[in-house]
Length: 243
Image 1 (tube, one colour):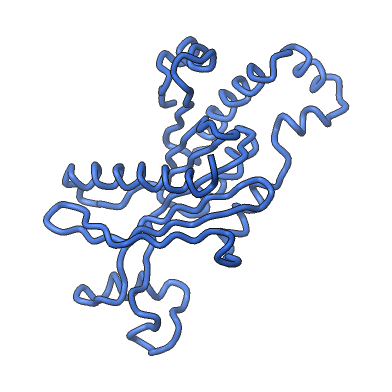
Image 2 (tube, rainbow, N blue to C red):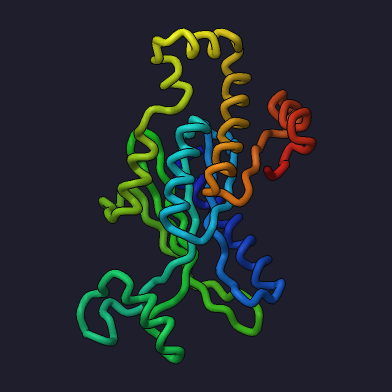
């Protein structure tokens, strides 16, 4: 599965999540931040975090390392400009200015809310999908999505750089394998099957994300009929159990 296919899949999932949430008639229609983690083509974990950028980024770093992720996606609500320049200054948009215009000028047409999914791969690959929307009469009305892939050029920004770095640091299991201390060796030697090792690391990562209060819920995912599904059922009671 390519990065573009994963990006399309998660964008669709999050679009449905947004629609379902708005349909409940909440006072605050904003979604929490969501993270998804793959190993190869398999989606192995998902986490919901508080609506705070730094908290979401920390969850991304912990999850990327703990889940031995080869691809990570983070989805959050942001803003997208319809016009190339700010109506306030006539100049290029400055950081935070889109949100200010949207919040303070109810009748403006220069800025839309959007669902943004940023995807990051080990090795440096990345992708971005921005899905602008409006909420009308209790329903989400979507505009055309903007998709940005590596071939489209470079990306920048503090959030992008942090997540790219998260996908370049050593995973927890790699760190343990390189650790010369006896305890690390004993822990690894106790489990021969690499898939079982990964599962135990996944379980531990779930606990860390909750304990550190960077995730409000975490789900381990598995293909139906696999041993992994069985292990999740035995430990958590349901293959899609949320911790």
